[in-house]
Length: 83
Image 1: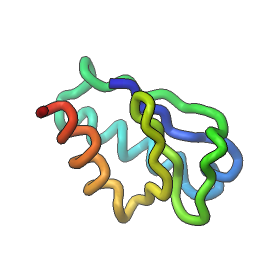
Image 2: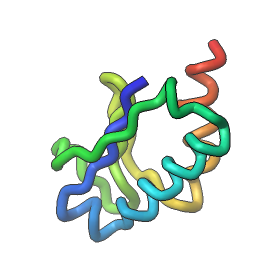
Image 3: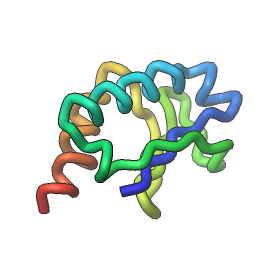
């Protein structure tokens, strides 16, 4: 599974560094290093007022914050890998 976290200027200002840290920690905690590839990306053109843009395969999600990260990870990463 390919996961790209936007590190463009807008997402950078909204905390993409923290979202990257949360992804790295969660992938390691769940031992998904062989299943999930994390990468940075430049602007995807889907800027949102709140949070960071994350692309998983071909799906783009906006508004990812430290507060909603856990639910997002459980739904979009763990949920997809278990199905």
